[in-house]
Image (cartoon, rainbow, N blue to C red; front, side, top):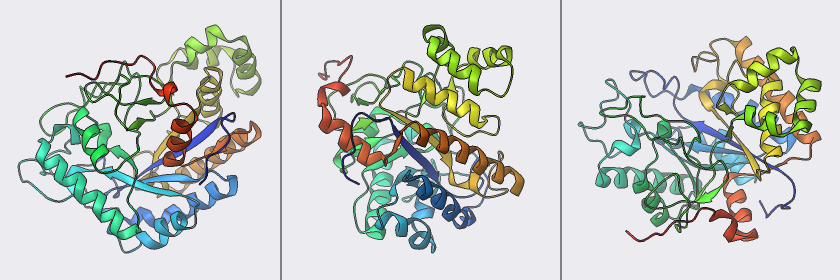
Length: 347
């Protein structure tokens, strides 16, 4: 994809493309959900919103990878990046890869093992796709400053592992909790090699998942309050309760109706964000592949909400862009804009 116009809001669709039912530490590494990806890809192409599929090792080596993921990528209708699940990526170490006991965060791994797994994942995708990947997300949001340097050395341009306002410290991995992104920026920023939640001088752009405190925006924006009263399908009082909740993800959870997703987008737009980034899992596209969508009816509802949300974004002039294309465009427009709150990179 070429560099898009800089005035229009961008939509980045990121899909954690992984084995089935990975919420269960004992689940087998089956990838039946990949057969359900083409339906999602078709919807994205209908609205000209190219998705970015962030793939685990078992997905990249799947027999259906070429048909379901590589084909739209080679045609320019998608991007494939990497998604590190330590428990499914060689080389394996029995101390850290006891998947039946717990799923470790990448941020827990010793540096040497982490480096080896990232190298394997990157090279495997490069060999399968014919070009090196440039976009990445850590499994279980387990990002760390160690990964910044490693990804940079492997030629990556952009990461999307940061979840502003959210801490994973109380969510156990194999030996410890996950990272704390409570104070991370909501805007894209060049990552620091010393603090994931601060801008720095690395060559790796962070594009956080879109998570906002909509209640703060409601207090500041009369325009958004009028918009919400017009579009919400429930009473103004119920809507106010929604906006007091925080944080709000741009993520199609079962409880996130199209109206709620649109309200998150409108908040991000009112805040002047250059893009909204939605995330979901490939396993959510398959009935029974995730806790959120156990039935065909639940999957059909997911597609219904996505279609309504995409229609609204199209009406608002939003442009779809892959993660790497956004990073290239954003950095080339004005590199200084990603260095807000810049810190010294001295050790």
